[in-house]
Length: 76
Image (cartoon, rainbow, N blue to C red; front, top):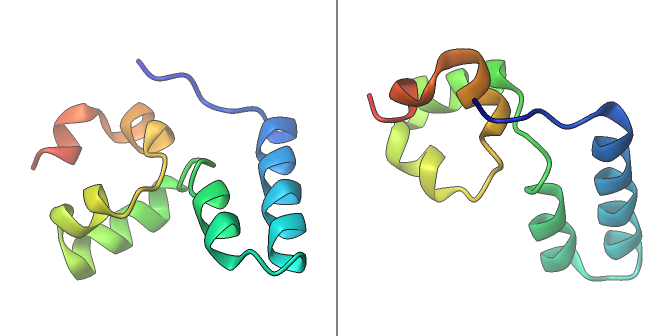
């Protein structure tokens, strides 16, 4: 089962993304923020509205989604 990130780890990612954004590096900020786990409830909405393929191709860290729903949910 995938390991979830601590709140401190998520905050560190957010702070790094904010710093990149403030420095004018929007692409870098976007890449960094996607290393934080996507909340499972948002992944469910994403999958329901856009489908599984765009979710998988989005680049988001899906570790918490997999931990909550199981890896088979990502393949359904």
